[in-house]
Length: 115
Length: 116
Image (cartoon, rainbow over all chains, first blue to last red; front, side, top):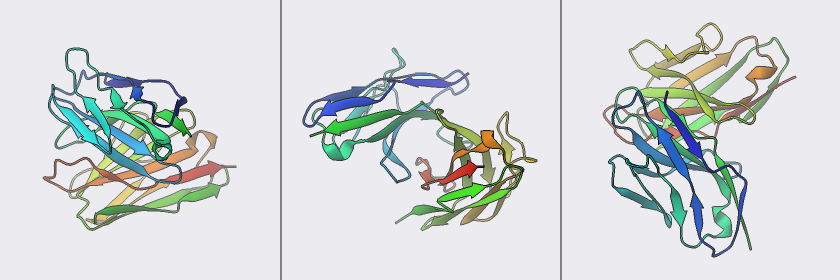
């Protein structure tokens, strides 16, 4: 079936350090999966951080970026310099682009950025 | 802007009783609404997808008899957890999207259900 595996948290990083959260996927029932990173800040709902619908493309938002790599079936999230405000839970997900938008989420990675 | 509100944010119910939660789309037409559950120590599982004027499609392990969903118009959906037990506790998320819109769905903040 379809699945998403991501870095097991919690991950603790010092402010201004770089970050990478790994995400790999398996899409057996979705021919052309779209890939997403969602973020959930404390006390808030799930927010879309970035989305890439075409293999080989890179998405970026708020200093974060992720490249859709079909060869390695990966979609790692990276940021060059994190801030305390980036502390949150990050979810990698894959989904269909149209019609039934069934999403498959990873387990989530809790990130804590310390000053 | 477009937003999704969920109500209530938190709720507690006694084992064996039922709990109704609501999802309101503001600023766009929620043609499709998906309900997810995040159980403790687990990720988000899709419960069902509801599209206006179409049958509600439930995922494996979730049934209409247990999680009846109403989607009467383009701005509102509700789901009830019937006969709730401990395994039903968790965070219930509503995600809504407009037809023909290839954007990712907007999610509410969720309803956190505790069962005593």
